[in-house]
Image (cartoon, chains in turn purple, orange):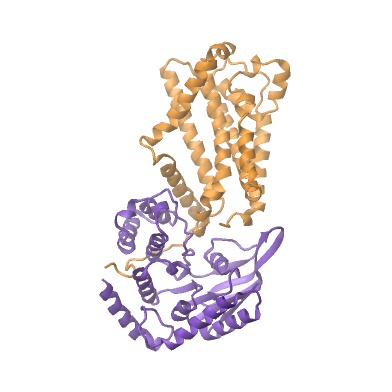
Amino acid sequence: MIIFDNVTKYYTANGSRKYILKNVSLTIPTGRNIAILGPNGAGKSTTLRLIGGAEAPNSGTVSSDQMISWPLGLASGFQGSLTARQNVLFVCEINGFTKEEIKSVMAYVVDFSELGNYFDVAVGKFSSGMRARLTFALSMSFRFDVYLVDELTSVGDQIFREKANKAFTALKKRASLMFVSHNLKVVKESCDSALLLRDGAAEFFGDMDEGIFEYQKFIKEKKGIPEDDLGRHQEETTATARSKESPLISSPKGKEGEKGKERKEGDKNGSQTE
Amino acid sequence: MAELIADFPIPVRKKSPWLVQVTVVKALMKREMVTRFGKYKFGIVWMIVEPLISTIIIGFIIGRIAGRTVPEIPYPFFLLNGRILLQLFTGSLKIGVNSIKANQGLLVYRTVCPLDPFIARFLFELGSTSTSFVLFCIIGMWMGVTLSFGAIYLLVFCGLLTWLMGCGMGLIFGVSALYYKEMEKVALIFQSPLIFISAVLVPIAALPNAAQEFILKNPLAHTIELSRKALFPFYNNSDTNIIYPFSCAIIVFFAGLYFFRVNRFSLDRD
């Protein structure tokens, strides 16, 4: 459970306050995959950072009884002048791992990230896809109850995305996800609940479809959002609805019944690409 | 192919806040060490060689004349002493100004608090500068300089006060640079004349009266002169006292901390 208790978060821009969350009290259940929805600048990433403890609210508290990951995004906390190995070592150290634990984490990350020789190259020279692979591999070696994913899987090639999706599916047994992505298709495939942010308020929807419906209604009402942007969102959702049967890239489905079948398909795809 | 999720996943243990902070600061200091010296061959050697060379150059240029004003101390050692004490101040100041930007990314990790990178870098500065000071003392003694360690506590105290002032100023400049980028430049301008008005090159006693009065307003001049007095009991430290720099250090340091605390919400934005 993640509890927002009267949380207010704002940024000051040109002397005026822009509220991301205004007196929000909310209880978000964990144990399910949650998508954070909202238009650009609504504060999706900020909300994720608040939950991950990377930022503090201006007033109120965000608390949880779960172990929550740091926000897994592209602006991850890697020092560009250090190598991937040194960065991984640092993250292990600030979490107080023992020497043996660090050793096994290192072996796992080397293996999973598939960076090869680049593992001993400064992270500053990495492409965004390589960074994403490193962030992802590192986070997978930690036992978190909730993983916060901020547009991480939107970069990287097909192989990485498939791998990430498969890992998320496997992860479902022991952890849940909170997901920020502008790609409604991806969100709809991997999440079963939604957290909608609009005008400083946050609302939780247990049902994904209802969340998306409200989100689109909100966008329609809101002026100033370009027409084509809106159109793309709708297109994507309808496309997903239509292509339910087609074996796209492997992806965790929210519905329990299709889960097993999906995973089998995913495994097959995975072995084909190997 | 690698396993999808690690089968050994290490549970992230919850620990007492104090223990977490100590672990984080340690890791940050280690990282600082790697970033600062790791890119050079013989990295750590540069920590000593750099101030030594510049001291030799300055000492060679003005030492013959300025050296006459300090008969009690061999001039190179006089200069080195002043420079290293000043380094404690300017080093911490510089670090404070850059620290927020350089470490913002780290705040994504839950265990890292906004002040931790400062603490780590300030401690690192203190550690590396004191190490080089100790090494210089050893080199000096080996070359025949007589040092007295009777008042070593005074030396340590002076060093700490200078360092605290640097930390305070670093915090103040660092936080204000978030709002006004110019403050980075101001900090540079602020520290450039310090070498002339902190009794680094020439002892206060050798200055004209009017200049003495002016220079005694600078708390750094007090700590630098007193640190020499600690190592050389016969040194003429003029009218310097420890109370003045002590109160300055306390005020500046806590002002810095307060300033940091008040503005903490502006710190964690990328």
